[in-house]
Length: 124
Ligand SMILES: Cc1cc2nc3c(=O)[nH]c(=O)nc-3n(C[C@H](O)[C@H](O)[C@H](O)COP(=O)(O)O)c2cc1C
Image (cartoon, rainbow, N blue to C red):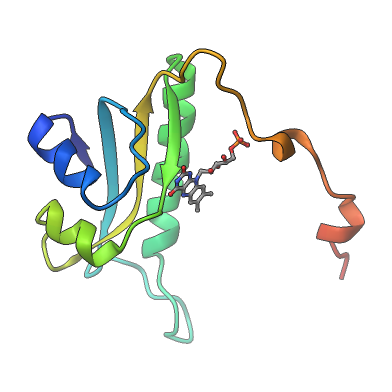
């Protein structure tokens, strides 16, 4: 996890994604590719999942503190890694903008719409 707050590094992030939206703090959630659990079968490992658990808890913790956030993946991961000088052994999962939503900002129209359970859940 990296915390980006300096004007210099925030500007570098702005060079790779248009999605900071002026947030004064950006978390970069990354994981060590050499420190993951490989699942039976050997085709998958836990890196993305481990980092996703961290990211989602950061969103909830921020919300508890009254801080808004936005999950950001709209960037070329190689360019972002270069911009923040990420070590070779690490992979970025996502960036998390932290700040306060603009006055009048609200969720997207489909924020609270729900598909019928039958479309998304199957009983085996
Ligand atoms: C995997 C993932 C990647 C996302 N990447 C971006 C992004 O790059 N830029 C952005 O503005 N929002 C991004 N979002 C945030 C979505 O826009 C946000 O979750 C969506 O607006 C739903 O929020 P709402 O239900 O509160 O409206 C991403 C969300 C997810 C789950």
